[in-house]
Amino acid sequence: MASPPDDDVFQRLRQKRDPAAAKKQEDELNARLHAQQHKAQERLAELVEDNTTLPVTISSVRVLNANRTRRSFLERVVDPLLSAHREEPYTLAEAIREIGGATDKLNRFGIFKSPISVFIDRPDPSNPSSTPTDIDVYLSAYERGNYTIKTGTEAGHSEADAYINAELRNLFGGAETLNAHASLGTRTRSAYSLAFDTPILSNPDFKFQVNGFASSTLKSWASHEEVLKGGNSKILYLTQGGHRHEFGYSGIWRQVTSLAEKASPTVRADAGDSFKSSFTHTWINDKRDYALLPSRGYITKTVSELAGWGPLKGDVSFFKTEAESQVALPFGDTGITLTAGLRGGVLYPLTPAGSNAPQQSRINDRFQLGGPTDVRGFRISGLGPHDGQDAVGGDVYAAGGASLLFPVPRVGKDTPLRFQAFINGGKLVALKGKSKEGQMDSAAVRSSMKRTMQSLKDDLPSCAAGFGLVYAHPIARFEVNFSLPLVMRHAEQTRKGLSFGVGVEFL
Image: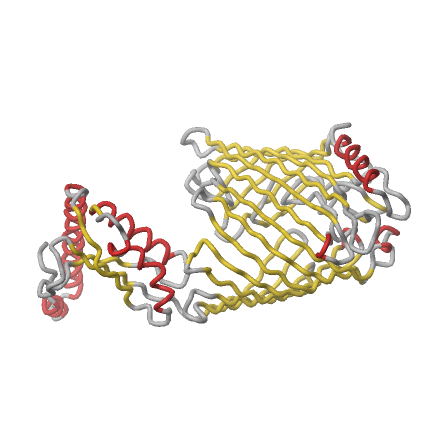
């Protein structure tokens, strides 16, 4: 490859009387340099392709510029590359593939600037222990700043808030992160959290997280405010097939307070304090090309929670599980996509510690359904059981929807803006056969749950159709829709006309 232009060449250009001509010549020299570098990269790729089976030995791997990161942390990532840890030598193609995998792992810790540069060189020929097949690997990994502080505002359907978020990175040299968040808003009156997470054994796909939080949320659809204080811990890992698992424990003190003057008897019965102690598991298999506006692929997800059973204690006891799936099907290369999704959930009462009978669910734990991010055409929590004007939630639900998204004329299919036409619906029901005292034996619970599940198909679900405009911003999806309710059940609350939704998950 030709040598790059010397600095004195640029200096002479700057001294010319015609600055425009000097700038033009400088640009031409830079263009020639970039072209030469591109040709050199092509020749290197051809050289690798012609010598893929050439045996090589990785004799050393060095990570440069990672001054704040622990040596022991980095060694767990790069040491497996060394040929000393392999029974058979690498081929050149295998070595490059393994080096690329280690580089990708370093990138996924989130503490290094991207891209991480890779250099391969021959060892010092004067070293008597080196062999003709030896190579040295250098990874230039510049670290990101120690911290990031963000402030801003967010607006959604019937809600707006201001927030501040601070993140401290690489606290102890092992990609540890401390995240502090605070927000004040119209619906979520206040929310504070402090979370610490760290990779386990230098593996970005295997993490431990602990989190403490406090929040106060106005739930106007049920005439009360909910105050939460507690914490949780999680182990998160990602399998080679892309399946994400989260196992966690949470202990949360909940309070139903600040009841409205016209709060219903159901809400008043659940007012006061409760403590939930639970194990949770989340599984996600996301194969979509873009989560906020997928053009192809699918996602399946389950969330399960076991509360107040056996040694978990607490004053609520149940098993709660939800499952959802979504598929996106493109129509060729037109930019038109059909998306369809299904969701469902069950809350099964269990016998709490110190009691001899299952207890009916509380309003804190029951499902809510309806709103601009799930079943459009209905108010927030507008579907399901109501006591007067209060949405009191249900124990079993099913919902589904389909949307046809197509490019906006004169804007093009490569932009994140789409028209959509949709139809969606769902049904949320309470456990059949509850006693007035809220007590049932286990046999009665099983019988009631069976009748409740069967009632989902007794008649048509509540549903709505409409059209609107979708914009997929990098941080959230925005929708403005005109909705027309088609079927509704007694006491449910519809929202005919325009609605605005912001979120990351839509039905």
